[in-house]
Length: 127
Image (tube, one colour):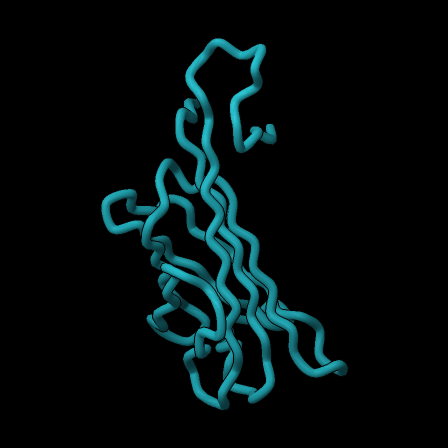
């Protein structure tokens, strides 16, 4: 269920706040995307298609992660999958995987590739 970034005036319960972290990375013909924009977000390669995404200055629990890789016009976009079970609130990091055509692959191996990642964190979230 979507939650507002600010509590409703009619809601007397604890407020729910949202933090959003965005990163824009580009391919440089290497295995690791180079960050172009994004404060407090770091992408670290762990293996082919395997990365750790680390955040600074966010609170709450990681509730949503979107990622897309834009490649050449003749290649389908790459997709990202977050392993939410690996999220560490202490380290503010999560393991993520990158797929091209359903296979683990490094997104930055082709120069000109663009990676866009958005993560959302909420506090006062209960099961």
